[in-house]
Image 1 (cartoon, rainbow, N blue to C red):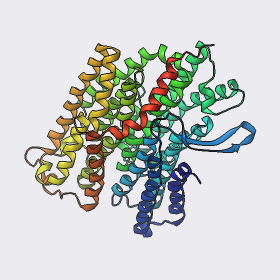
Image 2 (image 1 turned 30 degrees about the horizontal axis):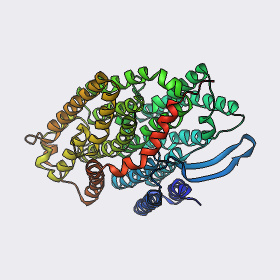
Image 3 (image 1 turned 90 degrees about the vertical axis):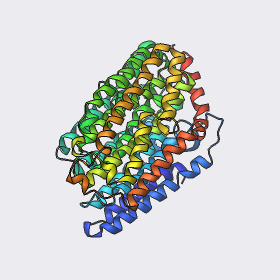
Image 4 (image 1 turned 60 degrees about the vertical axis):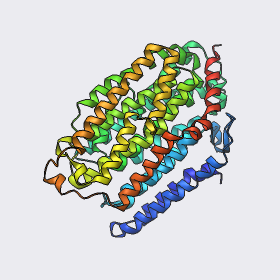
Length: 491
């Protein structure tokens, strides 16, 4: 079995074991098996980075086997500089989420942990798939465990949120399925992505394909105005669900733009770039303003995610190497920072059972260690230099200024909004005198919570101080993608 297959199927295997084993009276054993499974699943991804050859845009660790022979559908896997880091990020976040859910989940523990392990494997499958139908199967299959995570372990309106999440994302994906079938017919019966990249397509075909893919990927990112499902889902989802949703699942849509929209319909991508830039700037600026007036911490961070993902799509559609690389770096950084922000909210919720900002005040007086972590992650969310949040945003703004000064200036102004809503929340929750008896009775983080936050803090600081390993891996693939987009495919 190849390394990518191991990365995909190891967490799924452990998830199936948990489903077969577990009962709530065995919860302790279930948690340890889940943690071992998550750690092993992360360790099997490390050789991908160790054996990755920098300086080439070719797919590496390629595996190919016939799956559904009649329709020429293959189990075809591979990673390049664009997808490698997302495989590692997914496996890493899964470890953190298992640690985070250790005590907060007390019912159906085996099913909860199994859902996250299986979801992790499926998301890695999305990032590794080189066959269009295999990509679609993995892309859609991720909905099932996340739907269950929200619908079973979520808040009071969990059924509404789970249904909204499933309906929004499924409807968009149906148009993508039509696009995949069209490309299959057009290519003479192939689902191979490399073959699709070479297809000569007319202007109308490219435009229709571009918007079909946009329907699927924009909802997943989510871009304005199809972002309305995200705050509802985040508010109702359990802490681990919010962390995985923000850190990884939103990236599936952005990744789809790089793997499908840009290389398959490059002329349409260039023609409609103005629309994509406008939608991205609205997300960055308008949604940032919406975040400022939120009273619920989870809703505030959810809107913050929409704004930060606006930087990602902006970077992709300005078509220069520093902008696209910045968008990818921003995706990775947002994976660390948003997961950390939601896990911090989870730490407070486990103690006070409220996400309302007004329920807190002066947390630093009773939880100084925790507040130190929260301050670091808040600063990273603002884009403070030397944190992961700064690197991607700075690269995207630099690329945007090269593309058009006013677009760059508009994007840069959003950093002010990001600082405003993040620091305003931090001030009201953590600073000042103790606000009430709930805050007075808080206990500081235990060793498990310290480990969970420390892992993310190390990642945030390492990426902020030394981003070179991240950018070196992706440079060749980004340059190759931009060359492909620059070359017209019109027949």
